Length: 429
Image (cartoon, rainbow, N blue to C red; front, side, top):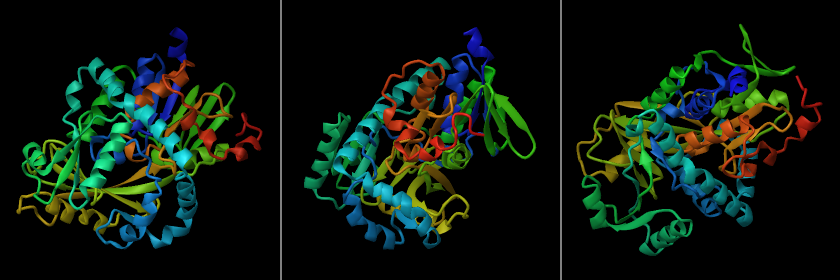
C-alpha cells in the first residue's frame, strides 16, 4: 500500500465516470488528480435524466430499428435527428452500428451490458454507504409506459426482459393509475422495473462524490488536458500553459476522449449522441422516472421540478444546441400527464454530448501498447448507471488485480488499433 500511495494517477474528465474512477482510486491508496477544463460534472453528468437504468441491457443496434428510422427522422417531434451538415461524418459510425445488428454480435453485447448493469446499483450502494450517502439513491423503480402498442407486443417485450432476468411487472391502466395518479388516461399498460433507482439531482449526486474524493486527499485541477505523451516511467500531460508528470493516466473524457488518444495511435469509432432536456417548475406528482415506449423520452421528478429528457441528435460536439429539440419534448409531457396547466415554455433547457460507440458498450480497458494508460469512456446513455462499477473495474486494472467480470468485451482492442501497432508503440510519443 505504501508503494501505491507514491504513485500519481491523473484522471482526465470530471463527469460521473471520472469522479467515480478518481474516488475509487483514491480509496485504494493512489494519489489522484482529477482534471477537467469545465469544472466538476458540467456535461451529461449534470443534465442527464437521473435514471440508473439497469434494465437497459438491450443494445440500440437492433434490426427492428431500421423500419422505424424514416418515421423518426421525418417527425419533428421524433426522437432522432441527423444534422444534414454532419451526415458524411456520421456514416462510418452508422455502418458499424448496422454491423452490430447481427444476431450473434447482438446477443454477445446483451451479455456484456448485463454484466455491468447487474453490478451497477450494488457498486453505488457500496460507495455511498461508506460515506453515509445512501439517501442520494432513490429506489422506487421506473415505468415504461405504452399508449398504442398492442398487448400482444407488450407481452413480448415483457417476456424478453423476463428471459434476461430483469425484475419487471406488467401493469394494467388501472394499476398504473394507482401507482402514478397524475399520469394520463392515454396510457394503457406499463412495465414496472422494480430494481431501478433514480437521483433527484444528478449534479448534486456527482458533487457529493467529488467532495468525498477531496476529503480523502484527492485533488481537482480545472485545467484542459490537450496532450498525453509517454515518458520514461510515466506520462506527461500538457496544455498550452503547463505540463504534469504522472505514473498512470485514466482517460474518462467522454465524447472528447477520441481526440486525446488518437495521437497515441488508437482509433476508436466514438461519436456523440447529443441529448436534450427541459425542466418544468413542478414535478406534477410523479414519484419515479416514467418513460414512454412510443414517444422515446423520459420524465424524472427532481428537486427543481420535472426533468423531461430524451432525443438523439447527430451533429458533433461543436455546434450550438438546437433549441427546437428541447422544446419538442414538452408536447410529449403534456400528452402523458393529466394536468392541463403544464406550460408550453419550460423553465430551462439543456443539451449535452453523450459519448457513444456503435455497439452500445463502453471502453473499459488498459491501452494495449501503453502500460499504465487506461480508458473509461463511451458509456452512451448509461454513464450515470455504470459510473460506480466502472470506477471499481478501473481500480482493479490499476492495482493489477483480477476484475470481477471478464473485461474483454470492453477492450479497445475490439476496434481497429492497427495504426498503433505501426507506430513503434509502446514508446510512441
